[in-house]
Length: 85
Image 1 (cartoon, rainbow, N blue to C red):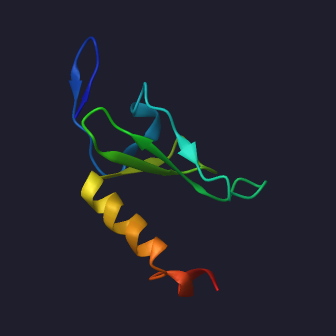
Image 2 (cartoon, rainbow, N blue to C red):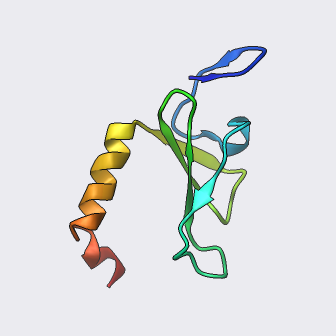
């Protein structure tokens, strides 16, 4: 959940990324100049939102910290190298 001064908002997968007000979106320095990348934002409840940088007003996927940790560790271990060959 995201807490604002006025109300508590339930986060959910596929919600409009623009509904996540007050978060700071970050993208990798490895992103290319045409903007083909994903952006991530830490949520106040500790979760992580992911959106497509080419469509920032589109849907956001919401993950737990443990889910993002598993993804990052898998990437570091090379488990997904075949996807970017």
